[in-house]
Image 1: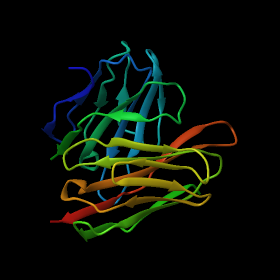
Image 2 (image 1 turned 90 degrees about the vertical axis):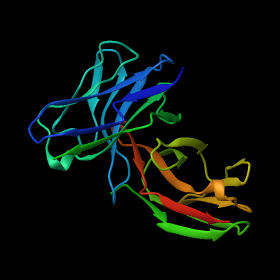
Image 3 (image 1 turned 90 degrees about the horizontal axis):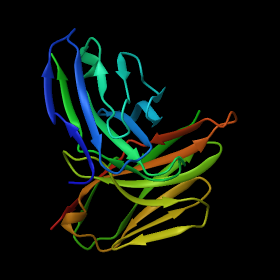
Image 4 (image 1 turned 180 degrees about the horizontal axis):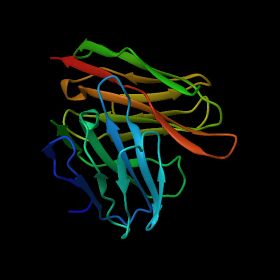
Length: 114
Length: 113
């Protein structure tokens, strides 16, 4: 199906482990984003990518790594998971380079670090 | 400091009882304001973009308006299926042409049948 999909939907991992969250979109959108959503906070931008092989830090990038070797994929890696990274993670994509166009979000990945 | 504040945090209405959600912002270089709807366990779903003060947009029972300091999401005769969290986000361009989108914390709306 066309759209933006995230996997896994749910993940439990231990402190110190590396974990990768996957994001795949079928629209060939140029821009892709990773957000985290926590109670008491709005969505906060972790990293974004303007195109394949171009990535940039957002508001809360520490402890995360991204890559974008193909336009359609934008994986997010937690190099050494910490409890503070327990959150719901959303991937999003935009059709246009203009920031004032709407983003389309995936269903989210609920990550628990124990 | 750039801020986006949504109020109230939560709102319970009877079916058919109209009301408004507020999104106030203090940002420089506003480029656009977005409203999203988020259902439990799902990602945000785009509703509207507003670009300039005085602009209004409508979709079914929802109407979004924008002033220089705030936006309202008016809900007319809501139904239980309108229950969701409504998110406001502001796109601002800084002095160095650095773009940033700032989300509010959302308003949880519950419509009672």
